[in-house]
Length: 411
Image (cartoon, rainbow, N blue to C red; front, side, top):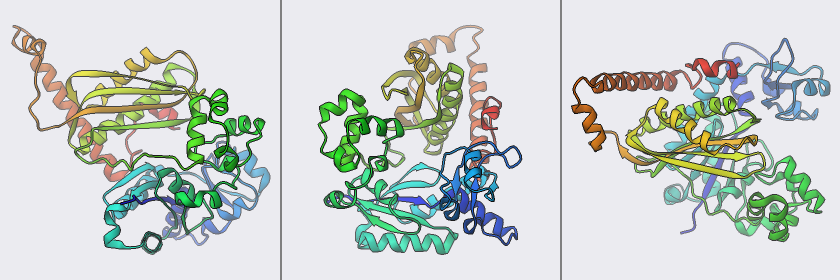
């Protein structure tokens, strides 16, 4: 049976969630009804736009642009500070709601996810009707709107959810791309950033249709492997599946595209620490131990490199995963600015499985005056600390407890 994939995306998530919180506290003005944005510092007027209202969009305000630019476009623009603890709580509520419809959920950011609808289609029926009912239920239950894209390919479902907003369902099946997607400007294509758009413009490739009909060899000569990927997306080629983190997963990982290219080792280390915390928490949540760790780097040239290491004993400790990821980074990094970092774990085993000790481990334990018992006790304390932090973050949000080394970057 042909798979069916939904992409669910909250409309102006940060602004919608902040607006609802303000209304719940007694404020009478809905941020969604006036020119408003989330982001920056209200007094110093610096930072970037994280989310915008539809009235703000009418003034040309764009997500990601400096707030000073947005204020020039609309002097009466209302700035509201972000509340990431609130956003993570809202995100968790949404994912829990969706998981009761289908367990096959892949969350890709705080406000969007993929759902493999295939396994529940017989229960809920026609995908378009089911998606419409789903978005209406979300609005009725939570008070904010979502867009849902439907396709038989992940990339096309993502593209469909970005069509006309808000509170709409769109389809973009493989047989619809020529009519619905090819006439769009190439900048609308998923993963086609401004630098790629500029290269394609010089090649007289202006629409997604132009890109789909382009010579792959020419694209590769100008954009390397990224050009091939864009060509495939333009033609609806994407065989990736919705990845859910069941207990029997072969691997658990996470990656992040940095807001600014990392130029120093220290900047990359901070990003790796955040990733290590997320990956380790997911391992513990699924009661898994990882026997292999890999680090991935994507440079600002879009060249990818990765390296992996097998551990003597499987772990789900944040500190161990972070230390190994940094060591792998040191082996890989050539000084080129870093655009994306990722950590992935594999060779998973259940945390209650007996661990096979090496001869070296046995010798350490049996050696007179060894510190094995002290190390074991320290490891147990670290595990309890990690579990306590997991519990706090699950209840109060991902930013409720922050490591000191990440605090400056958060601010």
